[in-house]
Image (cartoon, rainbow, N blue to C red):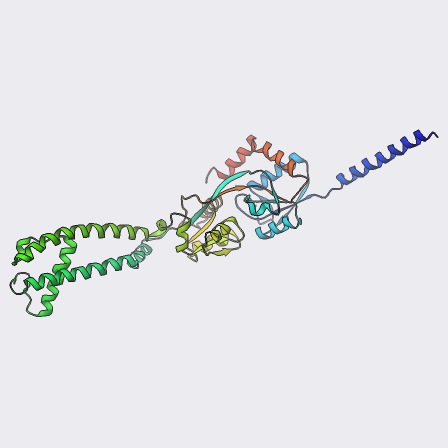
Amino acid sequence: MPSCFKSALQSCVALVIFLLTLFSTFSSASPLKVGVYPCPPFVISSMENEWNGLSIDLWELIAKEMNVEFTVENHRLDDLLNSIETEQIDIGVSCISITPERELFADFSHSFYETHLAIAVKKQGYLHSLHSIFLNPALWIIIGVIIFISGLIGAFFYLLEHGENEKLYSMKSRTGRWLESFILGLLFITRGPFNYFEFKSLTGRIATVFIGVLSMLFIASITAVLASKLTLSQGSSQIKGINDLANVEVGAKVATTSSLMLTSFGIRHKSYIDMPRLLAALEEGEVEAIVADDVVLKYMIGNGRISGQFEDLEVLPYQLEKQNYGFIITENNAYEEEINRALLKIRESRKWRKILVDYFADQ
């Protein structure tokens, strides 16, 4: 057999063996390991341990487009992130925010949903509002100031008039006359000036005019301060943004971007293992405010109201940190480019827009 023919035959055999090995490798490739954690409406678990939700629907469309098999494992968020980092699973599917910190140990698909962090509080009733008003330190400081100034004004006019003005000071006892003088000062503060001819002395009449003008300015100032302080003390109106959370008891889900944001602002907060427990803590008054993704809060509160829960909970209209959701993938994953191509294709489809409407039309 010629050596050239023999060499060519050996090359063909080697090529066939390589192709068979490659085919065997792909045909016996194990299914992708997909980790999920509950995050309605993106991942919703059922009593039968089945999974559905916006992220699940999207991933199933992508897997079908890629023609790959997969298995699903349930995780807590921190466990899921750790499993991605240690490559125990291939991809994480839920409402996972794309962050620089997570990019250090994993890759992400393109974003498939944009939202922001929000604050939820419990609406307060009338009794709580009255309680807030009467226990407001500003109210008692202002009352103290009014009493003090009333006493000064009353004492001033008493020294000027008590010996010659029986109309204003008619009580027989000294205590009674001092009480009359205090009432006089209090009336100056609360209702404005007396007629100057009520006083006998010239000094008293002149002082009445000046004190009367000052008392009107004082009344206007006190009214404005009281209105501002008492309004801010009621219900959720005291919370206007992230910095106001430092003055109340706050809760967040553990290992989330909400918890990280609160920590970065130096705001101490209680951590909860999942959203149901976080919302229950707010409902039961364990915390006064919670921070989570806006779309998740609105969806879960809206669904809870159907069954009679969360009637007094509301999401405040303040947008905190923006969030972009994506699938988290192990670093250098061979399927990353294929996942992104399928994701971009599906996001442009009518089917995806219909899925969004199905989940959010009533929210």
